[in-house]
Length: 120
Image (cartoon, one colour):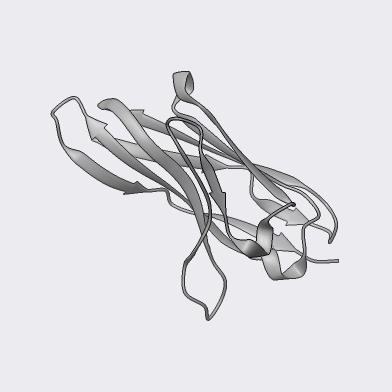
């Protein structure tokens, strides 16, 4: 089994910063990509940012220049640094990973979600 555990969500004022972390554990041979999605109330889940094993990244237009993503391959952990937060960033943030297990299975795994609320 493979699981993702997220941390770092919370309440922050507009203009503030938060850092989300997501650690993968279990029977992991390799992780091809890790990323973050978010879902605001009444909206569909959307990709925020992703990073592949080689280090290439992509970002939603709405967060470019404000969010950065990084990855510690040795710890199977991905981080999302969110700066200059806006009320429209309020959402449940979900970690996602595409994993190859030692049993040679290819899995797409989701975390349980962490709530980010941007409000004064």
